Length: 128
Length: 128
DNA sequence: AAATGCAATGTTATAACATAACAAAAATCC
DNA sequence: GGATTTTTGTTATGTTATAACATTGCATTT
Ligand SMILES: [Zn+2]
Ligand SMILES: [Zn+2]
Ligand SMILES: [Zn+2]
Ligand SMILES: [Zn+2]
Image: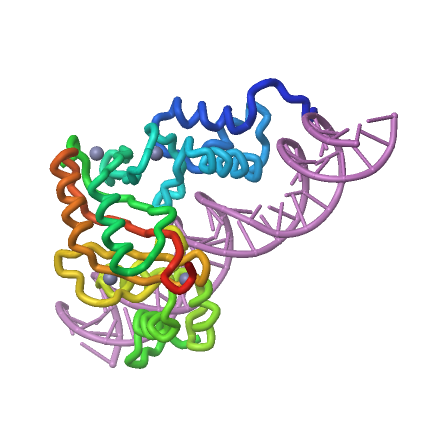
């Protein structure tokens, strides 16, 4: 296979695919669907995913081993995910209260927060 | 191998081992160490771990794929883990502010929280 | 006591998630 | 153009977790 590049990077492809799907997907789900577009191995997907995380364009949902597009600019807010165990819907929220709570915990413990992972499992509005 | 039972269950063995180690361990790390005590397969470890989680005796740290003993009774508080990326130390805190923040987020979004996963990566007091 | 039912455990295999190691190609710099 | 660095491809392997089914121990019924 040729390595010739068109102007769409692997990261672009992965990002656009995640955006289109509107829900968290595993690396291997992405791989399966993008195989037709010249992405042939897990490594390629993981490199693209890590790049997108570094650029703040996507997040990894640790408790799902899945990846999803970021909803927008965070500024000083902390992203927090609500994950419905019934319908599978995942929503990102940017919450200032929780950011403040972390800050006050930090002051108590002397811990310098860097990458907070907040994933709340439960049931969404529609599924209760 | 005989299935004859002594009075120590697998769950007991796993719990005591985690307690002794004082840090999160992966299922396979536990398996390796407990192989000498008659635990021979991943399934056995995972069954014990899941039982201990159900009973509230241990937690899974999702972002580490590792398991650790609970620090005590939670009551209505939410467990939140500070994970030092330098020394690897993991500490559990029971924080009422964060519990309240979740509650107020729930009120806004109509989401019924069930199992909140809060894991903060960063640097501890000693490592800054 | 023998048969039955059932929960816990053992066993084997495999699925699902992620990275290491190195080769080849492309981009960059002189 | 040739050397160097960075990115990408490729193959293999490591790591985490579960599925599927057999066996054992023990309580209950016959
Ligand atoms: Zn985001
Ligand atoms: Zn739902
Ligand atoms: Zn706890
Ligand atoms: Zn530290």
